[in-house]
Length: 153
Image 1: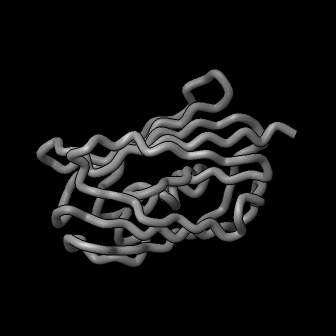
Image 2 (image 1 turned 120 degrees about the vertical axis):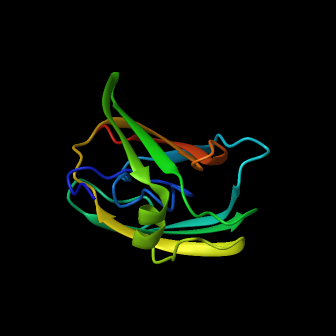
Image 3 (image 1 turned 180 degrees about the horizontal axis):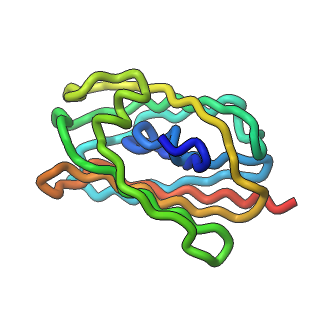
């Protein structure tokens, strides 16, 4: 975990990356599902606490409930972060490590699952775009999401 950067992951990566990649702020946060029809994960519900009012240095939690069409035992999560017009950060993480951080065991069973992520927002105010894409080791898409936060004060 890199405590200096948090992105909001939503689903596997909402669920999986979260403590490393979530940025919430006092401005509106929007997210978009960019998964394809054959993706392994389908998100059922995402709950933020506090709901949308977290600034730099403050804590948050995120609960994600999702359906897996098949068991997940390996893979990677790729995270790209854009701050303003600049590409600021890219990283890859182990899928199972991220699920474990959310309170799940790996492999994660087919069917309904949920996990809770906790973290702090170390970013300054501004515009952020996060792209999270998770794949199995065979290259099959688990999940894909983008998040945008415009917290210009």
